[in-house]
Length: 240
Image (cartoon, rainbow, N blue to C red; front, side):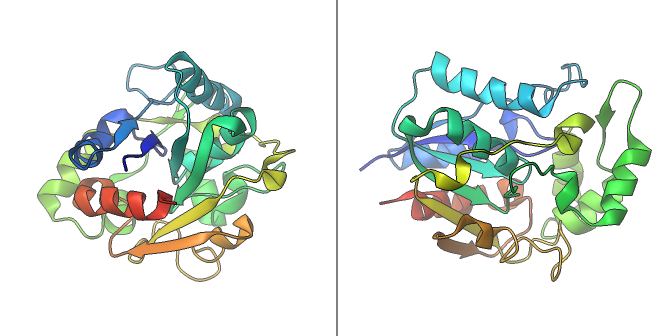
């Protein structure tokens, strides 16, 4: 049986990063769609709100009339699939959070990162409202399972992310009462959030209540370093 996936990327990325994942899913009989979130293409204006980001994903789903799909959010994308699910609940088959933020009602992404990250992003904010991830952090904390060549080529595809998308408070008035099944996919070498007090799992995953846990080896950027296995794990996380 083939499933339908909607893949929501994280900060600094756009939908191009999903290409090898989509190819693998399609080879195995599935359908996959990947919007570029508002403000995240290199040429986009960066002074967009978190609500603008959410609206862009909802509009994408409605315009393409996608139904009965597995909605996947990576990292920052977790903060999007929560309010998106509130708006299109009748279309979503399952939610999958891949090393993703799971916000509580009224929180921002910034509320869930270590203080030194929050201070750094504030310091790095550009006049147009964008903020760029410094390469040394990318190299050691985000894509720690890649060689230097892959690390550099992947970094070259990134662009500044809208600062407000990380600092805006996100109202989630119905998310925690939705009856949509949920999964959490955890890459075991992901240290983009420092393990321990600030780590992804179980800090974020446990907020989901009842959920399916799927794990795989890899960094925060398995989308570049092991896209085939990542795609297979999406199927495992999303299947009935």
